[in-house]
Structures are given as C-alpha cells and as structure tokens.
Image: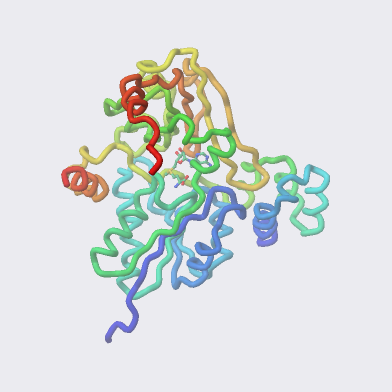
Length: 89
Length: 266
Ligand SMILES: C[S@@+](CC[C@H](N)C(=O)[O-])C[C@H]1O[C@@H](n2cnc3c(N)ncnc32)[C@H](O)[C@@H]1O
C-alpha cells in the first residue's frame, strides 16, 4: 500500500503527472508497481473506490461549530472579545 | 523529576490536494515533532501523514454522530495540550489552512500560550485558495464575503449582493448543535428561503469541491438557486453565490474626491 501513497504524493507534486492523461498515467502506475485494483481506481478517477481499499469508513471534515459565539456565552470567545476590545479602543 | 524541556505546539496546514500543497516549513514541523496529531478529512490523506512521522495520532476518534461539536473540538485541543504539558514538541496537522473554519487549532494555541508555552500557527493552502483558482474568481474585483452556512441561517446578516458570497459547511446547513454531519432537502429549502431574501430564484449558484486526491477533478456544479434543496451536498462542499447586481456608485463621495483635485506640484 505504501507505494500507492508514494505515487499519489509524487503525482500531487508533478505538473507532468497531474496532466499526463490516461495512457501516461497507466504507464507510470505500472512502473511504480501499484496494485492493479488501486491503479484501476486511479485511472478511473474513482476516489471512492480508492478510499474503500486504503482507508474505508467515514472521515469527518467538519472542524468548526458555526452555531455562533453568543449562543455559548459561558465561553469567552477569544477572537470576538479581542475584536470588541479593538473596536472600543 | 524535573522537566528539562518545555513543550511546544505548532499547528500547520496540509493543504487540500495530497502532495500538491504542503509547504516545506509545515513538512519540517511534522518531521521534527515528538508527536503529531492529524485532523484531516480523508483516510488516504491520513495514510500520507503517517508516512511522514512514526507517531501520528488521528483526531477522527473524537467525532461522534449526535455529540455536540464544541465538545469534540475541546477534546481535540485537550489531547494536544496534554502532550505539550508533558514537555513534548507537538505538531497538529490540519487539512487546508489550520486557521480557516477550524476551531481546535486556534483554541489549542490560545490555551497553550495562556499557560506559558510557545505555540504557533503556520498557514496552509485553503479550499478558499483552490476556489479562487478553479472558479477564476478574484476576491479583489468586487469583494467576497465568507460565512458559515448555518450561522448565515440563524442570524440576520447584511448581504452585499454586489459582492460574492461563499457559504462554508453547507453540507450540514441548519444543524442546531445537534451534532449532525449532514443536511437534507428541508434544511436546504430553508437556506434557499434565506438566500431568496436577496437573490432571485433563477440566480445561478455553484457547488464547489476542490480535489483532495491528485487524480480527482474539482466539482464545479452550476445550479439554479431554486434547485438547491434537491442538490446532493456533502461535508467537503462549499456553496458559491455570484453577485446579482452591479456595484452601486456613490456620487457624493466621488464628488468630494473630485473636488480635492490633483495634488499641486511642489
Ligand atoms: C471545517 S472547514 C475546514 C476548511 C479548511 N481548514 C480549509 O482551509 O479549507 C470544512 C469546510 O471547508 C470547505 N471545504 C473543505 N474541503 C473542501 C474542498 N475540498 N473543496 C471545497 N471546500 C472545502 C467546506 O465548506 C467544508 O464544509
């Protein structure tokens, strides 16, 4: 599996690989000895299939509670209070 | 036992697309840390972070359906701070920019500093940066306002419809702190009603998602505002609302400026 991650890292950093087209990409995947199932997913542009094989399950992308600060008054929202202070100054 | 080394905290960004956006400085913070915490949105990306350090601890375990998100983010900060207090050199790696719509890095840094530790944030390439590139949108042209979708729904905001409006976390629009990680047509219909106060029903909006893996294409789905309730929108999507009116000139200010004339040569 490690070589597919290395391949993706290399692809992410390479202008040539990111625009290689299917044939060029297929050649590179073969040269890097990426497993067939993983290579097929990459060639098909199927991120879901790749994730299923490498890291199945839910990954949460949410990192912020946007129910806003005044609904959590007990916590002093640092950013808001700093801005208020600046505003008053 | 006396502590010989004081702990430090660096929260760094990983960028959005695997392999494309990681800065040399962020990579160096990861490599030189004693322990790395990963707050990333994708299992393949997390596997990539694991290749950069032997002790990478995922922050994913703190999430749970139905759990108040504030609690999740507090626990993430707690986990990082516990290691800082033990004298460790801690690196928190967050996808995109660690300080853009991300609570735990800001909180952990503020708390670490309050306790006398050195704590820093290093920027990363945000989905906002990808959005400008993919959609050919320059926020300097007519301006651009960024809001959390749920915050936009819960509060009366003044929207300038001559500027762009970008709504984040639209994939859980309308969550009242119940700890949901999705939205549905009913909630999106209410979001549409809020947008309809300022925009016509046939206004075109864009559902945007930058590629996380380097072989993916960006999602740039142009739909009518009236079709928003039926759109399939996930956690990583952002809603982009173009302006619906021209900039309105301000004749009084123009006249005042014109009256100043050219500076006279000295
Ligand atoms: C918790 S925020 C984190 C943003 C991240 N810190 C950044 O700099 O992009 C999550 C929200 O960011 C936006 N987002 C995350 N990944 C994205 C992507 N690949 N493309 C577009 N927007 C994305 C979405 O609005 C999503 O709901």
